[in-house]
Length: 119
Ligand code: HEC
Image 1: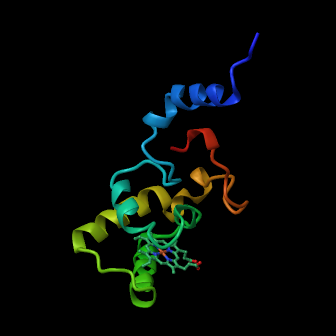
Image 2: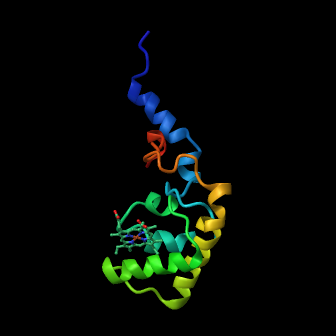
Image 3: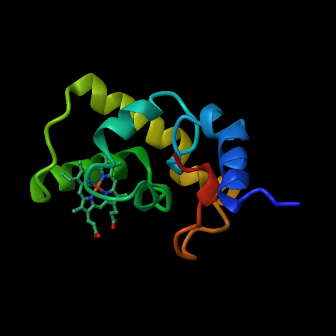
């Protein structure tokens, strides 16, 4: 009897997993309101992990964005967009979250994503 080729098996595994379609993206940004604005404005120049490994107060996040605008050629943000981005950063990557929700993998190098789940 001839066994199915490994490629057939791979195709079934990749095509059959419900996660590939249920998970809309692979960014490490925690769920939260206005997460989409971060994806639009904050990951063009560096990895999302650079963001998620950082915990700051709202004021410090605001200064960090200004720093990127002044020194790294980051584009201007409309005031309401900037406020929404800060709302997100303050709620999911604020300084008070450090103890409760900091990812234990932070600082240990990039986590390997399951290669079968990448489109
Ligand atoms: C135009 C390019 C650009 C954009 C857009 C950008 N950044 Fe950055 N950012 C940089 C550069 C360059 C660095 C320095 C990277 C390094 O040190 O390797 C940086 C560093 C950072 C750091 C680490 C800062 C530190 O203290 O070391 C954080 C956090 C960060 N960015 C968050 C953000 C967030 C949040 C946004 C969206 C609001 C954003 N970035 C958008 C260019 C950008």
